[in-house]
Image (cartoon, rainbow, N blue to C red; front, side, top):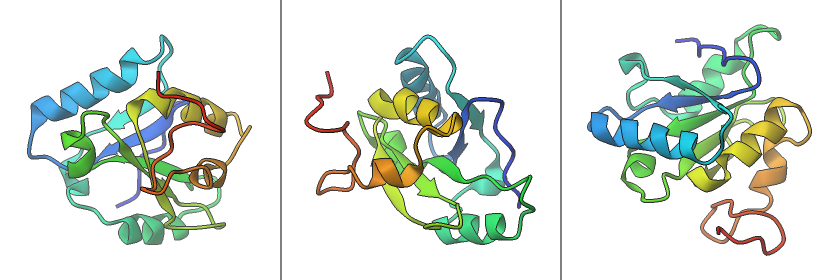
Length: 144
C-alpha cells in the first residue's frame, strides 16, 4: 500500500474517512481558501480507508530512500467533523516515526511551505503544539 508521492512543493493530504463526500469537499475547499497557492496533493483512495498511523509508518519504512515520504496529513473522521478541519500531521521520517499532532486548515499553508522547501521539519511544529496537541502558530501568534 505505498503512498503516492505528492506533487512538487506540496504536501500529501490523504483521505482516510469515507463516510461523507461533502465533508471531504469542504475540507479541501477550506485548505485551498487559506492561500492563493496550492499547498496540497489530495488523495482520495478507498484503499486508505481507516489506515492507521502505524501502518503508514511501517509502509514508508520499507520504501526506498528516493520514494520515502517523510510526512503526511490525514483527513480522518475527526478532521472531517471539525469546524477548523484539523488534519492529523504524521511524521514518517526516521527521526520520530509515528509522532502526530493536529493542524487546523488555517495553518496548513505555512506548515506545508516550510516543510516542502526544507526550511523546517515536522518536529519543529509538533514541539510548538498546545496542551491538546494542536499547532496554533508560534510564540503567541493568533488564529486570526
